[in-house]
Structure formats: structure tokens, C-alpha cells
Image (cartoon, rainbow, N blue to C red; front, side, top):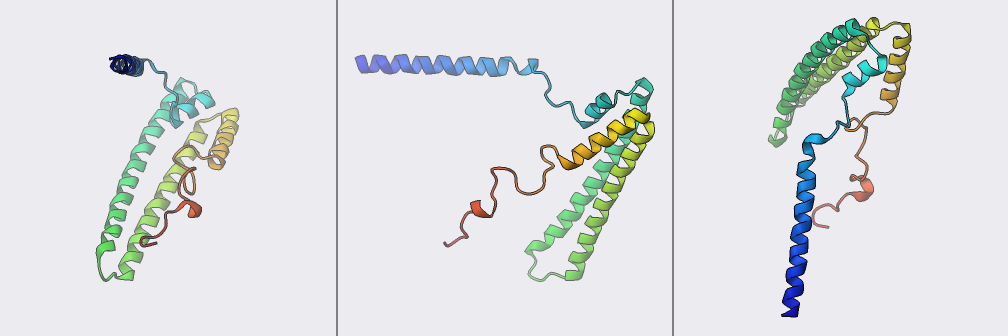
Length: 168
């Protein structure tokens, strides 16, 4: 009987702790402060745009995002077409090269659109803001944010962490 009583007490304690953590987690979900304000709001804040500049910046940003979204959709379709050839027994290298060239041209278009966007933002800026924009862009290029890094993710599988090939 004493063993069962101890188990019941332990079970009750665990149920109460789970309930406490559930209430704490779900009860505070709507109260959280945003930790990441997004790149466009960050830039507008850091450059200290006035109302007119902010209005123009928002128009530029909206148009830029729409253009980039369209290009990314085109890239995705082209990559889907490319990878549809993976299951084919025979692959025409000219077709593959053509699809890769199409993808590269779309990526080039994306980079050019981004460059032109930042040139337009620079045109909105006064002298001090333009200097600050240059610093922000250089910093962003040398320290990419999460999800924009080169190479495998930290803790990911590099050559030393790859699983052995099948059959070994």
C-alpha cells in the first residue's frame, strides 16, 4: 500500500507540474514581445527616416518584395522542372544545361532587383543616412543573418559527421 501511495503522490506531482507548464506556456503566448522586427523595419528605424521618407521606403519595399516573390516563384518552377529529370534513365545534357542557365539568369535578375532596391533606398537618404545605409549593408554582407549562411548549419553534418554509406 505504501508503494502505491508513493506512486500516486509522484503521479499527482507530475500532473500538477505538466499543468503548470502548459498554463505558463499557452497563457503567455499572446503577451510576448516580438524579438525580431524584420529587416525593412530595422532599416527604417536605423536610418531614422522621416514620415515622407518612410512612406516612399514602404512603397519601394512593397514593390521590391512583390518582384522578388515573383522571381523566386519562377526559380522554384525552373528547379522543379530540372529535378523532374532525376528519375529519367537518359538525360539530355543540353536540356539540363539550358534549365540551369534559366535558373542562373533568374537568380541574376533577383540580385539585380535587390541591388536596384538598395540604390533606390540610398536615393531616399540624406548624407548621414546614406553613410549609415552603407555600414548596414556591409555588415549584413559580412555577417549574414539566420537562414542566410553559407555552408552546413552549425551542429549539422559536415564530412566528419556524415553517416556511413549504406551497406557499411
